[in-house]
Image (tube, rainbow, N blue to C red; front, side, top):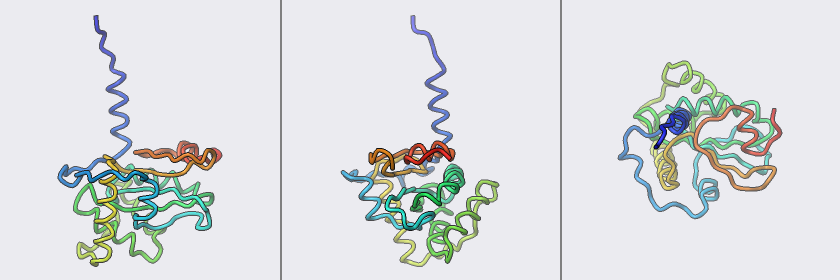
Length: 192
């Protein structure tokens, strides 16, 4: 006799709550997956750097500016930014505000400060920073290319993190937010 266990459903629900998925399935068409996702993101992703600019190792984060889980990951990364270089790559998978806000972050004179203010607004439930719907062509193309890259990876939710673990040298990737300790462990830093 089969005994029902709610555990698989609880695990799935928990994982679903740790990341944001596109609302419009038409925007999530998947192209051919790159053989080397880390290298593809490093070479093709257009983002901004936060943290240790001199670090030889980068942690790449594909995020949607409208995703609250991305805001939680941003907050978790702040204590680690003195030790590692994060490259935040905006994509537009959630709604009409995603692309303009991503473009505004890319164009900001101080993208780290702009991202901090934006994510505080997202986490407070006030929608994030204001951004013009009239995006310069170059920035619109960057967001579009980032989104196509995201889709080509076969990823279904943001934030999506790619890194080389600093302890093992192994390539690692993960969907969803993490707290600071989990993020440090994931990328191979000593736990703060």
